[in-house]
Length: 250
Image (cartoon, rainbow, N blue to C red; front, side, top):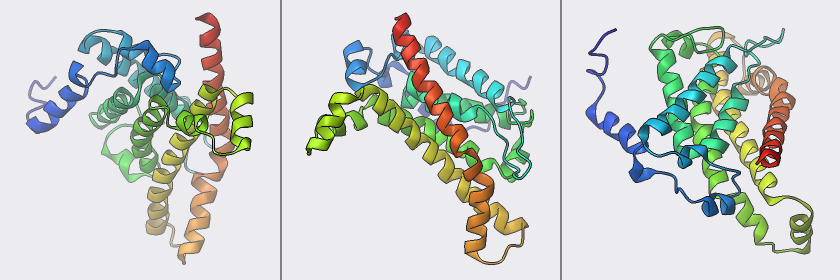
């Protein structure tokens, strides 16, 4: 192994990563905080020290590699169906925004350094010249945004401050934490779709020779978004049910 692997990495980046996972930016180790935020738990915050935090992020790196290579291709699109969206959203809910982001960052770097962690056991920069590069970037963004929305109970705050009788009735009949989790995950999926769509649009424009932005737009939707909506909705339901099972065991 090359002991000088970090020689080309700017010192400022290394310091930023260390700060990200240091105790100074630790997610508050306060159960009441997570209960108010709607989270079942935050296992990464329950441990002490940088090694424990890294171990949680590395667990999700491994899960991302497994999910990426638990895949199938639909006959009409080059985008594979994987379990990565499920893993990204689950990491955001359980680890929180910062550690989930760091976990996805490690996953991407592992792939760039040659580990076969991308779909189809691929690795290296060549993956980022294919049609799925936007989704990989979307995983990174969605991990942070989903975790941030959920851990700060942004959806719950809106629901708990009803401005109409409809919202009051809604609040009385539904579990606020479940709603917060569901909407946070939907936002995460939309972030992944947005990143994937933008890159795939450009990819199709460059190689397919389709004339007209509207035609490319429709083609991109058909190949990169529409086939996956129901599948990803089911993944969100899996996460919600995992939460319910966790609470029963707890």
